[in-house]
Length: 283
Image (tube, rainbow, N blue to C red; front, side, top):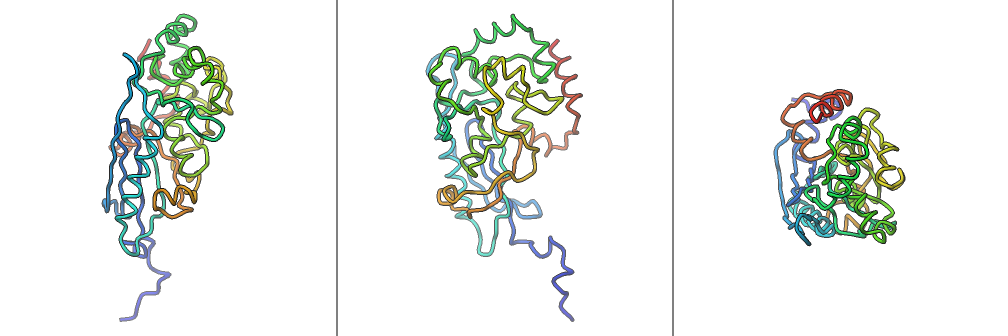
């Protein structure tokens, strides 16, 4: 029997068993990584847990460096499980949302990450609610005004930690903090951006009025890019830390729960529908 010319083989046939895809989820209490083949079978997995920090009642923080160490641990574990001939084609990341990581110009944290579970910004929440009410915020963001989300975290830092606020060149979140450590690039996905209460979900862009309420400028947030595309490549430093090849494409993912909803087959709705439904639910 004549051998089938390689050019007639499908992409799947050519790469079956050799090319793999890597998923990374930086969650609230643990970071997980899964290695998949092109048929969706799990070929390797790893996880690393970390704790929460509660300096006083109602406060919930995390050490950003602990999150990064967990990422390094799971990616190095995956790299150690690669089989001969296997090639990782891309790394896609998801993460917890609504956790704020202020950093300096070099990307180094200026404060612990303030968790989405944190409740310290009650005074800032009451002030903003008294001035504008829930409707104005929920109309733009699809979320009710909540003390535990980044809009209020940033306002709390500005009011209560002015030195930290002044030293913070960027206000990142878990997904773009880790993405920057992996690639040296800043990038925010729409799903995580929507949870910050700094995004207008109808325009799909950072909102100037919400930024004004937070007291920050647009350039202090990561640029927005659609989920599903590569936004950078693994740097030499990240490669040395993780054991994965430098230049590996890193894909802009989404919030972990949003990703789970897509995987479960939940239907897509337009931003206008999100806004209407979210605002109506909280009126």
